[in-house]
Length: 427
Image (tube, rainbow, N blue to C red; front, side, top):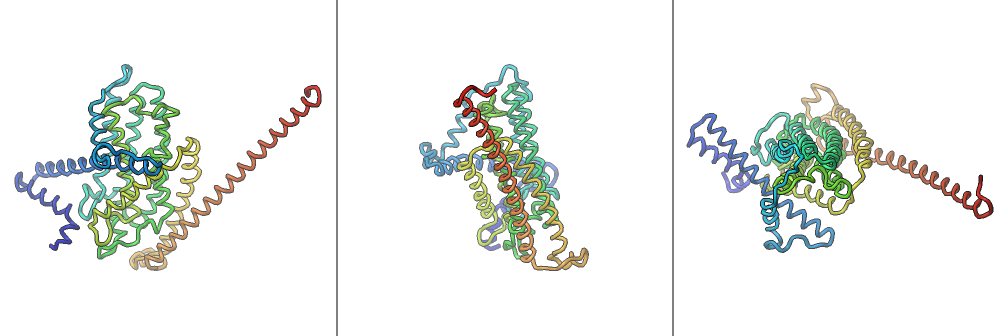
């Protein structure tokens, strides 16, 4: 194996070497398999925890630059030791529990949300042959496990026995459950084009036979990519959809009664879920780890970092939206557009096929992949622009109606004022 191949497959080579070492010591069998899986889980959890620390530092620095501030710069060079200082602070803070709380539910909630956040990474492919479990329903496994945090949030709000915590939990559940719908709807076009729900197969569908990157699905499905990203922002509770932590309204939401490491576990769950959404977006729409020259895992890191940068950019620039605007965007805009997009993709993918085997089996017009990508791209843009034009027209109608109502009230006030000025009040 050449040096280039060794570098490109470094993670797989190291993993196979460790597995062979364990088998050589313990012998082939269930015990060796359990040890190998345990080591893999330990390495993955450690890598994710370290990434969580790096994400907190990076976000504080990037948002500081956006808002013309400095950010962490005292703890270590460039403030790199700030996450470690924050971790020490969380470990040493007093662990308080409300006297009237349901202790079992209250204490289990942060553990559950952190566990399910880490469980998502068990099916994500990080490089060719580097995946915890290549299951044939990987897409829906990720979404289902990610939505399990809803239960933990409800447990935190209920177990705290605090009206503000419970209110924050209810608002969070309404937001998360609502935005799971467009997230699922915009995964369907990707499944239609790839012909599989396996995340590994989806990446391979965006990769050429020689291993070079092909056409990413964001070119085929720009509307689905945009809707999935917006739903991902809402699912992770990030700005401008961070209504679950509306401090000015509900005193920090469902985790207001938590402190110390319990609070840190909630923060870990938020950032790890954000990292998972970024990686899933890269896998579904940006070709995953496929890329030229550089090793595959480096390409995955670069693409994920770019997606997470957009998360940070939104947090540093956009104000928080109102809850009615949040739900209206979901049910009145994203869900209808997603349904129309699914219908269009199903029809066009049936009519314009890229495989002679599909043409002979199901009929249709045989076209090159580039032509199919162009057709679907144009259809997505037409649907998006049509939806935006309808929304703009509806907003204009509502604005004119509101202006007319305001003007009628002003006229009534002027008439009343003239009656008082001219003489006796009107009877």
